[in-house]
Amino acid sequence: SATDPQRIVSRAVARFSEHHPEHALIVETKDPLPMLKADPAMLRRALDNLLENAHKYSNVDQPIRLRAQTVVLPGQTTVLEIDIADAGIGIDSVDLPHVFTPFFRSDRSRARKTGGVGLGLPLARRIVRAHGGDIVIRSEVGIGTSATVRIPI
View 1: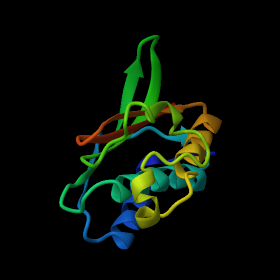
View 2 (view 1 turned 30 degrees about the vertical axis):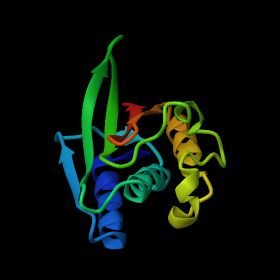
View 3 (view 1 turned 180 degrees about the horizontal axis):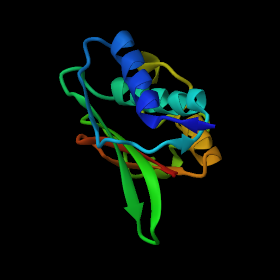
């Protein structure tokens, strides 16, 4: 069914702010975002997982940025692009190819402190791929991580 991505983003932002009021979240949306054929609950769960990772692996004094916009990719495919970026610990380049592997934890030294079992990114990717899209993770140790979701419109 037709889903308003602005509403999905707003709900994910509200949930994040409710659970982590101490962590600034900067939201930029290029209006209007086009309607999508999507399951809103599943898509919001994917965003929740990505926001939760950004919170876990960055300091509260560093804001997280969420940007949502329509992008035309090479080949004229139009997608909804949602980018969630943090200025956190980053992911080692050796670990980056494995972040979508179930139960893989890049940050083994902090595993007890941050909790989780390594299913957030694999689940988020499955949800986004079920909608015909994909997630790209870019990261540098000590600089931060960016997760970019692209879903065809």
